[in-house]
Length: 251
Image 1 (cartoon, rainbow, N blue to C red):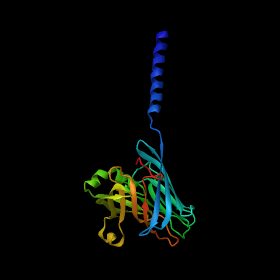
Image 2 (image 1 turned 120 degrees about the vertical axis):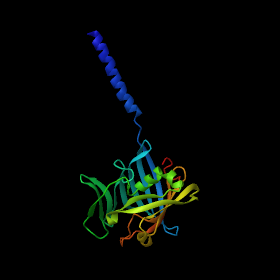
Image 3 (image 1 turned 45 degrees about the vertical axis):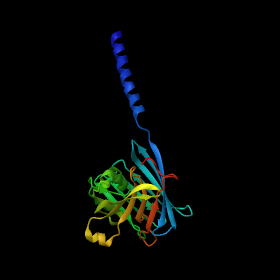
Image 4 (image 1 turned 90 degrees about the horizontal axis):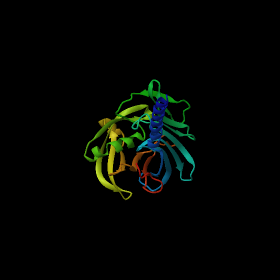
């Protein structure tokens, strides 16, 4: 009987050690902040700041909240991103309360649903979007670049479907490195993103993004803002992410 109790005590000890060891080994959640400064294209006129606060674990983002503030500090938009289902096609929701605009992507029982409520409209529109490994949405583009940084530097062209929420559609896009350069005093690669379709390339301006050459973090974005003007259009902007002033140095 005593022998059985001794064995039982050893077994419980092993179980508890395993549980406690598992808890101790679990990586802690890290809070990471970065700030982007958005200027009107071709000028130094500051339009807004975007303050990103993200939760990371094991080198991967879990969730992220973004607050957009105008030059006076007033909140003009907010966005919530959830990477837990997918890094490249995360669920997200962006809202501009004053204009009544919102857009995003959400997982439902039936699949992925893109939605938008345009400026000046009361009703939200939605449409199911085919999922897949090639689907990229919102900040998931940054995750794609981080994962494929070596391929881009080697001259490979990336092909993917990029969600345009305002159109409730994912279009074929491509991205490739244009050059090695320096941005904000940092070694960078210049990546151009544009529609894969030739006709659409004639109709839409490309998006130029600059990433740290070795770390893969975003340094600069040049293209249409994801925010809206009162007329419903997207202003063209340059968004700089300095490595200091709260920018993430661990991405």
